[in-house]
Amino acid sequence: MSLTITDLNKTYPNGVKALHGVSLVLQNGMFGLLGPNGAGKSTLMRTLATLQQPNSDLINLNGIDVLAQPHEVRCRLGYLPQDFGVPQGISASQLLDYIAVVKGVRSRLERDRLVTTLLHQTNLYEVRNRAVSRYSGGMRQRFGIAQALIGQPDLIIADEPTAGLDPEERHRFHNLLCELGEDRIVILSTHIVEDIENLCPHMAVLHEGRLKFTGTPESCREMVAGKIWKRQAGKKEIASIGNAHKLISTLARAGKFEVRVFSDSDLNAGAASAGSTSFGYEPVRASLEDAYFNIIRHTA
Ligand code: ADP
Ligand code: MG
Image (tube, rainbow, N blue to C red):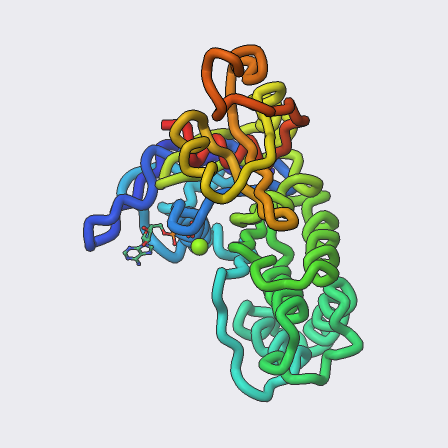
């Protein structure tokens, strides 16, 4: 499987330019699309899911022109939207059966088999008779994946599926996506670095409609390796640290703050001449989160 996106642009009728010249090539496996709220993640995903038209572009899924042949794509696509409503009081088995009918699985026997397989695959078999509207967040997202899997899609698009899940649900959901990525393309959008870190062999950072990075999480981290420094600071110092340095993050810790900054040069070496804002820094191992914050806060 391969998905090629070439120079994708989207301007909404109200003038908001949500995507600027996005180009990407994706292969089988999990692909993480990381970006803050408003970055354009959902816009990109809805466009890939053929639910809205971009202004100019070329999207090609294994030889199919996605925009010219949306129907061909829809047959091969599983889409888990950022927000989806479910009808009240209908059980998971009933709802999956209904969606399978809509997606064209006519044989009752085939549908029964399919629904049972999907319920097992997403670990919902035990709760199959409970109303989906009464599911927990994690169960609901797994149901979202179950419905997306009807029709054996080559491409699965999950838009911020882990938002609001507790750690255990998140973990379970990650495992499910990982299994699915073995023989198809799975695109996961998120604003949470942790979702990408141990899960996605490839990733991109989207910010203000532009792709700011594409590559492996390791190569993303490498961009700031050896350039992240931390120190303890009082609340009042933070503003002046932000003026003197590229602030990456501040973390409250037992009444103090742990401040992390990006710097190309050795902060301690220049401490005597640069004054107090450069004092007391220690170099730290850069994390993917440091790299991400550096991209979205300090990279034009
Ligand atoms: P994300 O999913 O990364 O949070 P979105 O794709 O939802 O980002 O939004 C990107 C930008 O496009 C935002 O500025 C948002 O307000 C705007 N936007 C999204 N959907 C619409 C729409 N239907 N009409 C107008 N503007 C929109
Ligand atoms: Mg979104």
